[in-house]
Image (cartoon, rainbow, N blue to C red; front, side):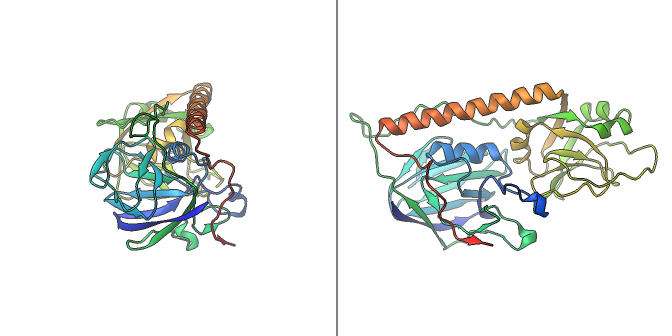
Length: 339
């Protein structure tokens, strides 16, 4: 395994180290955090032969660019964008070989808000409670600055088809689709919905718009809501990611990966797990529609998505094995750890 350095030449609005978040951290009061769009982050890592939970890079808006000092294998996923390697256009959602000294530039991010860049190997990054995911409230920003160098431990070597001077991949990639119009989010009813008769019909028949007051804790949505008929106190409690919360103000909040407790506000539903990635891509001005589904449908959707990821994981393994290129699935992490 050898060291590769990525020289960061542009960072857009904000670029950070990222992964799928902390495991078992909420019992000590620290949110799980992690990539807002878990699907895109997972697929990016799988495409380059990394474990699903490997550290990668998340860039929010603007342009992100870097230049490796050795050949690397990368994958760019997330929102639609323009990706170039040495000024030549390349596709997203597929493995791409980047020769040493060629700049990778990602720009024109549209429809969604985030792109993810995975690199075959182990990115060296600090960790907090076992994760490289940022947590600004804990003073763990993980921001990648322009002009910095990101070390990667990798044994990637160039591979080419026996008869053609190009790498050939035909992989069953579950690419996310980003519509121009309103995005439909599937939600499951919670017990709290019964305290507000008519809230489900109201939510299902209304359009909600993401506001610029949204942040890593949750999406704040403009749109009609109802409030409980009485002033019975709601006991604050923990909630899953994607909970639909109605605060005292006339707005709807979809809680994200950095949520904590309800603060006594009613919870009327939960976004399905397969809807969470698209919520992670929703920026200010995005219109959302909500569709109520039952728990069984939500579980089926989740199982189908997991099946797609496993098919991709196996296909990448078969392709890399055929090329004589070892994957990174069994390697440990090489990050420095903050305790």
